[in-house]
Image (tube, rainbow, N blue to C red; front, side, top):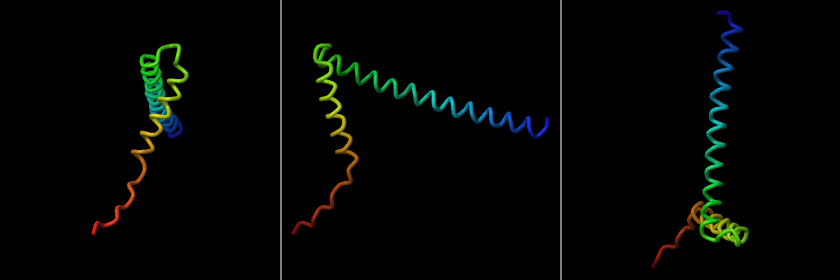
Length: 78
């Protein structure tokens, strides 16, 4: 095989790996969103879905912020 055909084959293989990664990330994100919506729908029902969605987003946001913040340094006890 010539050099250009090998280069094209290598690029095609790399783009297939990238597309597979993007497809996997898309399906994972879709699963997370749909699972979140199912939980909100199950807990609040279809009549209060929007208000429940906002409440649960606030809960998730506070949970993430609480666990991502760096712990503050404690003063030495005397």
